[in-house]
Length: 402
Image (cartoon, rainbow, N blue to C red):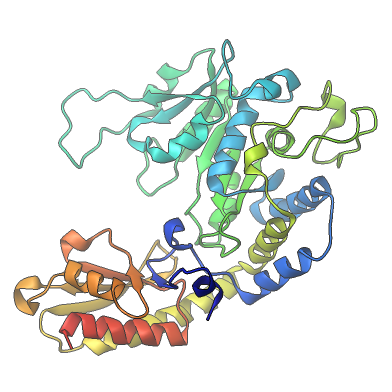
């Protein structure tokens, strides 16, 4: 009996990939060992975050960085930093921003449910771009840099942007606009690694703050993330995340290179980030996973996973009404297996196959985004030799009906 069964929960094989609802990516043993070691002793969290900042800065090329309780927490804390700066009174008010500049600009076609993370800090999202005609379903009216420029007011505190292929306006234009008006640009890059180079690409381009998930491609603890960027903004975010009880301001000795005490007029109370606190074990686990996420190691791992998928794909050679091919989640990312089902020829649909996998032993969950196109998608990130064998066997039986 494993730990899940001990609590009455049925273990599954997550072949859907880095989905939070399914536990996201599995951690490597070295990360688990580091977290276990960290749990056996105590440390000051401000000093641990300062140590994390050095490592994150080296890898991301940012001035500073911190470990957060996921990418959503990084967006909330980054937005809070843009609203407050080092103003302690403002920190103590959030999320109440009555009378304060609190507008965050975002292209209308990028607005989504993830924006709750930004609004949680007390920000008001301003949708940028107005369609000049009725846009057909499935299409979007792309915002231009002039739409952003015209939306800037004295209430604007930040520009939020999701760097995806084809995003408009181009990131470089948005960053240039932000620099021209002294408005920070926050990037939601939660799922944008791999490729490994994206860890520093956005900072190199000039983004002021970047939020990454730690529990997806990096394969750190699921409830971990990274906020990296300009030192003053990261410091303001740290101040609103740490437990600020304890010593009086006069006796308080925070790590000076991360938290500039001389710029503060006192200590903030427990801030907007109190409910997003991150444990010492999570910080250590994320740092070890981040250090292990090198280009050389990733290429080797990705190739191994691709071969596992090809071993599954070969089972479907010659199966009438079925085509199987390997592809990538993102360019230079983890591999996926696409199994295309022709219902008319096979006599069963992709949905039928997925349901049989879910109801099998063990339950296998796949990526279901393109079921309407007849595609069953197997993501490689959580596979090893044994789980790949089980997935391949059960998938073949589900497809052929055997």
